[in-house]
Image (cartoon, one colour):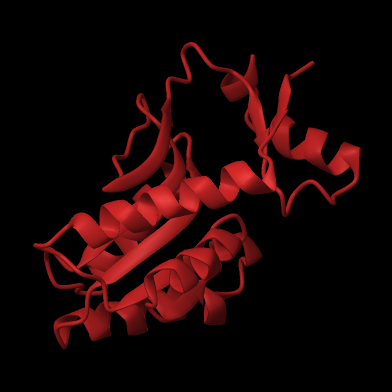
Length: 172
């Protein structure tokens, strides 16, 4: 049975403010847009938008609906060729799968080099992908907790357990 670790609203807000501070302190790179990655990155992206004053867009790989994922990424890649910079936001960089899919899709669509960055509330130091901004770092070889973010806490317990069980190696 996995260890479910709830992330309280106050902790979540503090994490968003940590990322906002890191983004603001980065004098060499300023995003034009914050891109929420559906599902887990949508709420953090909106909060980060409010904290930074930057506009928010979204893409949703979890929906498996081309119009809201692949097609959006092609349009976003085009915006980078016009000089815009995009900060993609997700709740956790765990295995790195989502970030890797996004990076490959954006590169294939011709995104301008240096125009894309990633931020997560929690970053797994042994992930296959690296992020540019993070609030906290974990090591999945040591920490096997399943983090339950405030927007997930309203889901039925069975749904949270099913999500955690999708990749048993993360929590075993």
